Length: 240
Length: 188
Image 1 (tube, rainbow over the protein chains, first blue to last red):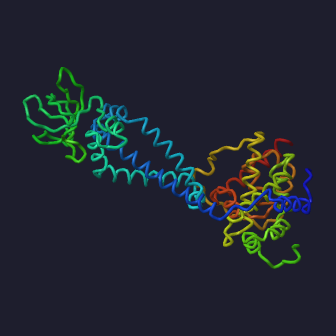
Image 2: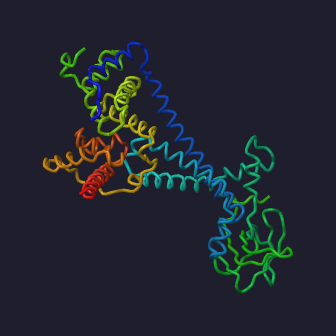
Image 3: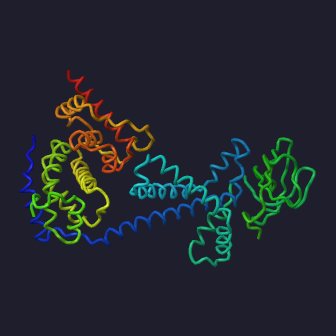
């Protein structure tokens, strides 16, 4: 059995350290500041996470890849390839830090970790989808294109205007026998070839003026469409 | 001021006096908790030569941080939380026993285990097993067993000290007891 000091010697040592000034009481504001910083950290990280995830949704809607999962495994592959993985990794890291911070609070550590993970995921997902539906990102992208954004312009121009492979968003300008012609949001005029195997979502054909996502490879300036999906009109697309 | 001079004062009211600047009252808290902290350290830091220093460090930290204590809450839980942190840091520093950053027991929900109390014969048996095989247990099982069987805390208090869900306390206690019994079975 190990030897422990008797209580009197322990007490004497500790009280001597206190009286000798070797240890001093921290002021109340020190703890209030720590709590305030932890709360501020949680708020800041949550907002950053919502901003990042909503931007990912916006960027993928902007280049059309958000809409191609309905075209089977090829669509799913295109969706995964077009995902901005670096941003998603950064978001995952922020999520992990946020979870560690949140675990400091009793409402979180008294429950299984899974609950707080699910809670944060639901909150961030819903808030991000909400923010992605606002004019925030289209407005910032427009400012970035006009070089009027004081910072983050390159970020918006890089991710916000980046196209996705085999995915082209635009709107139908003319119907033809073998398909239709569309103006893309990147300013090009492209013929789209449609075959009996081309999948239309929703079922049926497109009409002039429809906003569409065309999914398929481009060959000699023409898109051979695997699939065409009619999508909501702007604000998700910058039509200039 | 000796303990006999303030027998009816609660820990929390003494802590309030310390917060207000009465450093001598801290001695009272040390009288009340010195033996308990030493016992906790001796059982949890089994085989660690510097357990005595760790207890001293616990009280020094408690004094330095006493203004973070809310007198509306229980002083003992607050002090044991400081001790838990100090002892876990000591174990990590030595690196002799594994302390995982993420414990799977705290990730998923478990049904809340019924608190096992009242069976004195079983408690005696577990304590005898603990005396024999405490050092054979993983710290994450050793600590709740020490708090439950030696410090006589309930699941809720243990959960608050370890900052884990109450159901996880039950899971760890059951697994700790099972590990002890297995160690006995392996030996015989």
